[in-house]
Amino acid sequence: MTVQLGTNIYRGNETPILLKDQDRLRHMYMLGKTGVGKSTVFQNMCLQDILNHRGVCFIDPHGESISWILKRIPKSHMENVILFDPSDAENPFGLNLLEASEERERDFLVAQVIEIFYKIFDPEKTGVIGPQFEHWLRSAALTVMAGPEGGSLLEIPKLFIDKRFELKKRQYVKDPMVQDFWQKQMASTSDFHKSEMLNYFTSKFGHFLNNRLMRNIIGQRKSSFSFEKILDGEKVLLVDLSKGKLGDMNAQMLGLILVAKLQAAVLKRSAVPAEKRYPFYLYVDEFQNMVTDAFASMLSESRKYGLGVHLTNQYFAQLPVKMQEAVLGNVGTLMAFEIGAEDAESLSKEFYPLKKQDFVDLPKYNFFIKLLIDGKTSNPFSGVSLPPVAEGSDNVHSIKLLNSLAYGLPAPLVEEEIADFMK
Ligand SMILES: Nc1ncnc2c1ncn2[C@@H]1O[C@H](COP(=O)(O)OP(=O)(O)OP(=O)(O)O)[C@@H](O)[C@H]1O
Ligand SMILES: [Mg+2]
Image 1 (cartoon, helix red, strand yellow):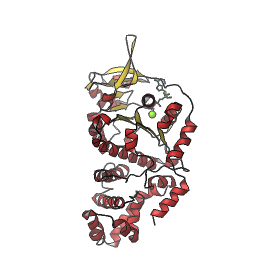
Image 2 (tube, protein in one colour):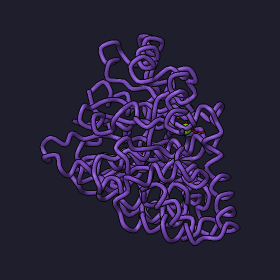
Image 3 (spheres, helix red, strand yellow):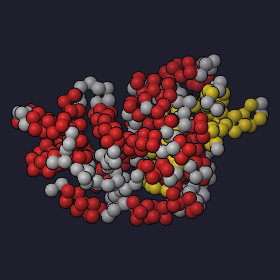
Image 4 (cartoon, protein in one colour):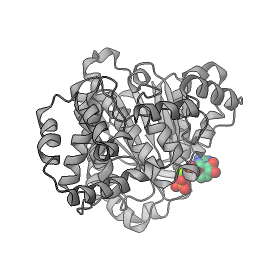
């Protein structure tokens, strides 16, 4: 099966530009200035995927793409849709980063917690988050996860301020390193140093946990949906991360958690026989805030397990160097609309023999592409993107209602539960 990205027009002949399933698993990166039509390309692709019963996840930092897609989902496909709208205060979904069913997954997620904190608070790794914070965070996360009921991010800072709570959670810890952390290291840490670290913890976690919307989402121990089921059931997960009600940092946190959880589920697919690993497609718009460097460098592995990633943003130079290298080194299909002079300089090397000026002069909706075809990269050629698909039947209200009933929990219930396990 294929998805259409746009149309090539050569001497009056129009040819659809198609990307095959297998080639999509080698990922796609799209670049272009504001207003050139990037989000529209993803929206059109995602809609084709939905209509073709493909499994997809679309992470949208603005919310506009999600409402666009929702307005075009026919009744017959409604049941497959999971709409995650974190601004729904009445029926919050649960999203627990620290939920693991096996040891390897647990270790992967704990490493992700640390990556996420670096990404949000210290992306250049200047020492704002140092080895000591990492160590405390790792030990605390493993402690929270040790018990039969598991635990959430919300419980991490509490471990350091409530001895009784610490002992309650610690009783399940089998890992001798973690036991040592509490029994020896913490016991011999001076109160002054402890309170210094604690302030540090509280200030970092406070961003998320003092916001009622966030607390009710990432504080729940059981996530509302399982990424494994989404992957294998070819479901459609639409994530609306518009910052209005959430704030920048909270939206970013949720995006990072979702990508980490998706990645964890993908890695578990090594246990699923290859013929049963249905391709699954992830779209991340303005991806630079939503994925960690580690995610980008794991792209080559994701392919093996059937995850095809589609990324876009406005400026290449804005990405951390490691991310730039990982993206260029790992994506099979590269697409560029009009870009700024600086980006044109670095990208034109990828698009040889095109020149810098070719990218700076591109009219809206026009692009150059190096397309992966049966595992081989084509020479660069030009294309025009598809205009936005017209609106279809309006099932938005029913989709929203079905979703909050199926996946959300009433806020008072969630708050009661959280208060209960924070005792
Ligand atoms: N091929 C097309 N033909 C006609 N209109 C288009 C086409 N592609 C996009 N548009 C329209 O152009 C406008 C900008 O498109 P879009 O939002 O996709 O740009 P963008 O590159 O994502 O911009 P930003 O970086 O600001 O998010 C939208 O109103 C969209 O409907
Ligand atoms: Mg856009």
